[in-house]
Amino acid sequence: MGIPTLNRFLVLSSLLGILLTGCLNLPPVPAPAIVPPSLPTALELAQEELLAQRWGKAWILVANRTEVSTEKAAFLSLLESQLVDRLAEAKTQAGGRKTLDLEATLSLIQNGSWVPPVSEAVEVEGSQASLWLKGTATVLVNRGLKVENGASQPDIVIGSGFFVSSDGFLLTNHHVIESEVEPGPSLSSRLSVRLPGSKGERLPAKVIGWDRNMDLALLKVEFKPEFVFSLSSGPDLIPGQRLQALGSPGGLEATLTEGIVSAVHRPLLAVGEVMQIDAAINPGNSGGPLVDSDGRVVGVVFAGIRDFQGVNFAIPTSLVRRVLPLLYSGGKAVLPWMGMGVQEDHKGLQVLYITPRGPADWAGVRIGDRVVGIAGVPTQELSAAQIRLLDFGIDAVIPLDLEREGRPLRLWSTLEPRPDFPLRDAARDDLTERVLPLAYGVVVEDRSPGLDRVFRVKSIWPGTAAEELSLAENDPLEVLEWVADTENKALITRWKIKRRLGGYLESVVQLAVPFSSRLFL
Image (tube, rainbow, N blue to C red):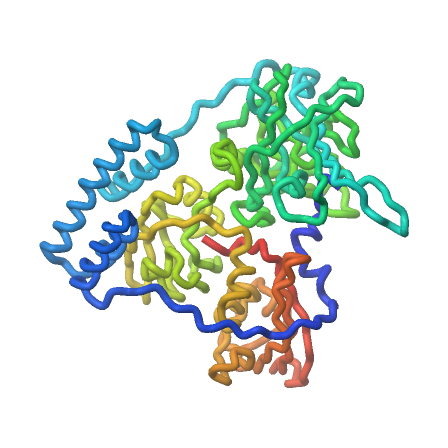
């Protein structure tokens, strides 16, 4: 139970064929962000934002205007000096994430670039596998009783964890401890940790911080471990490199297996990419460390594919290192985002969706724009763009480099906390026509204005569900049902289509896409 199968992440195949009883709920048309029609209006609105202590919004209102004037330059210069004062004040208050964000924003304004500070790697205390195993733990979540076949039995989730500090902090997966932090049917969930050689004794544990997007959680126990792992600060491993997996498969503590990296850049998480490994992994290994020959952690196990041997997945340390400080902050980790959905092709990243009144909307980003750089760093890959955003907190203001109709454009954008399920929110709150390109890869034109369910296909994105259906330009498409299924965490829809490539024979198809869509920045 501690390790989810890939089916849980890719619910498309498991949900095909479900008969839906829901109906298409048509949301009101979302109100767009206010775009000032002129520089004087922008300056007036910016002054109001400053009075409300929203300096980021004030900056983008004026900086994103293309006009050149002494009033604009004077306002931005004044705001820059105020940011310098804010930074000095933040440094007197113990610094932290806010200080970093202010430093980053000022560096981007003044120099056009910013490189986040790199924490020094802590070397491991030993290179013997027997010592590494003493730094692991079995994570147990007792969720009470469950009823199967008319009989009650214990509902226990088993996972793995490993110590990252000498005062009892350890890492595991979010899905292992999900019942501790997410609403669910069990009100009696209890979390504990069993250490190697403890002869069954359990230590009570508590969740410090968690992040659903990267499936990580930080726990705390009152215990001083014999071994503390360090996270590798080197480059991610490449296919063929050897590694060892430590954990508690089936609750069998202190188990070590060996294998290689089978592949990299697998897009299985909402943020970033993971690596595929062939080391023997089983239920209970979730949250356990992958280490190199020196005992440095190079990844965290999180998933496998049911009925497949040697096809397992792990979160690379480059991602773990970025989210770990957020977990130490406590509670749900706050990841930054700009509120736009993109598709990746050979030309880079094209904007397909903009969250109404989100940061990208306020910045003036448009559907059809191409993202070519984030915060001074050129990017053409979604994963690289997402990772660059992780360098910042929600107090930062960053430049976004775009191409619009073939011309370069730089817009400044604020950042906001990334929601758990952006696709779910879009499906519930926005028009079907706007969500279809991002969710299923089909760009449509509304044939019945005001109805938002009868369309004509304009284009198809390769590698998407729409392409698998062999849809083509000008094919008619009617959305019969549109259900945001919170139980299965998926958007499920049923279409009536007439495909040109199928002789225009009418057919009804049903599709599903998980809420945990990775196509958001």
